[in-house]
Structure formats: C-alpha cells, structure tokens
Length: 325
Ligand SMILES: [Zn+2]
Image (cartoon, rainbow, N blue to C red; front, side, top):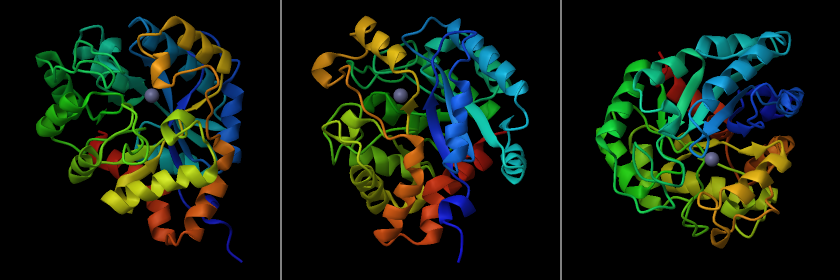
C-alpha cells in the first residue's frame, strides 16, 4: 500500500504568521508542526503595512539567525534547488513574504535587498492604500508611479508580485503591467463569501491567465461565518479549481501562531481591521495539522493525484521556477 499522497508529493504552504517582535523566537520551534503535517515549504511573513518599515529587516535578521542555528531540521529556501535539497534531506524549507510595499520605505533598491535576504513574494497594499497603490478595504485609486516601478523591479530581481489584500483597480493595473505570473497568495473566492478581502471570479480568471496561482487561506471569516471545518475549506479549493483549473490553485493557510499578538493588532489597528468587516477577537484558523485531512477530502471529491499534487505545492513550485532568479 502506498503512503498517503501528502507524504509522497511536495507540499507548500505559502503563508504562515509567526509573531513579529524582533529577537523573539519563542514560537519558532512550532515550525515543527508544519514538518509533522508533511509540509515541505512554508513562507513566513516578515511584516505588513501597519508596521513601521524598519520592522521587516529586523524580522528577517531574527528568523534567519534562528534558521542558521537549526540547520538539521530547517533550511532557508531561496531557490528551487534549495527546496528540492531540503525536501530530500527531510528538512522544512523556509522562505519569506512581505505584506505591502510600506516596508520598502520608498526605496526601490529595497526590493533587491529583501530578495537577497530570502523574501520571495510581496503584495502591493495591505487593506489600506499606500505609496504603491490601493488596498482592498480602501478607496482604491489604482497603481501609483512608484508602485509601477516596484512591480518592474520585482520582475527584474525575481520576486513574485502578489495582489492579495490589494484593491481591485490596482490589481488590474498590476495585471496589465505584469511581465511574470501574478499570484493572489492568500485570497478566497468572493463567489462563496462576499467580503472585500475575498476576490471576484474575474480577478481570479485574470490572475490565472498570467500563469499565476490563487492560494486559499484558512481564516474563518474569509471562509464564511468563522467556519474552519475541512469541508468548508475544501469547498473554497474546489470552487477555485472549477473556475480557473487545478493548475492555478494553491494552499496558503495563513495560520497565526500567537493569538495574543493578533488580538493586539485587532485592538490597535481598527482602520486596517474594522470590526464591521468581521475582524473580531474570536478569529479561527485552519491549522497545519489539517493538511492530510484536506488532501483526503479532495481525493474523496474525485481529485486525481496529479491535480492534487499541483494544488498541494506543484503550482507554487512552477511559479518559483519561472520567476525566482
Ligand atoms: Zn494576509
């Protein structure tokens, strides 16, 4: 009897959230939870727009130093080859992502700087407008001249451009300017749950047309009614796969490890997380441990092993192969 598919194929969770306090590594040993759930690659967030720009380089220092001290189980994954080597050695491959261009501090050369430190995707704007463009919960005025330069610079250095959390008008501007596949790293279909953080069918189709990928997140309010059951999660995966094809769907659970940190954000950043849009303290998440059950549920729905391998990680790997330098 074969081992379960989740153990035989590359599994890539494209967004996980460790607490963002420089020097604080308390939760990093919990990366083992991904390994134990058969995840091979995880992208860790290193800041979002509500933070001051100086936070991101400090978080990169913190996470990189910890990974350096734990090379028997973890590997910084800055190339497809490094991912394959890590997987063959039974290690969890880790790369980084930035949620919003505020972290660039207005400097185009920070794209290369962050790339050199392991950031492999960045989104344009986080819920609110910024110097690059519009957020999905703001009055979106479109991609700015600086935003356009950043998208071009990302293509040059090999960083993937993401339009999750970004306004629709800005997203279409990015898609028009795109030289590379564009991703929605962690965005669920608005066709199932009408929330501004979710994305419409047309946006999903346009992202797929670039060769990109839409990652489904495991956050209760975006799955609907704070329902984080496996059944509801796979309904979102299935909706996306039926709409744009299994070759354009991925996983990005967005699991938050430190709930106290999350509650502090919700309390302090009401303009980014307004209560009337469902941002409340009792947030629920699909946890990494659920991945084997998610894989089984999709198999039971009739997904072939090859479609599942694409959804579980193959599609993110394809984008990395095309875009990363
Ligand atoms: Zn996010």
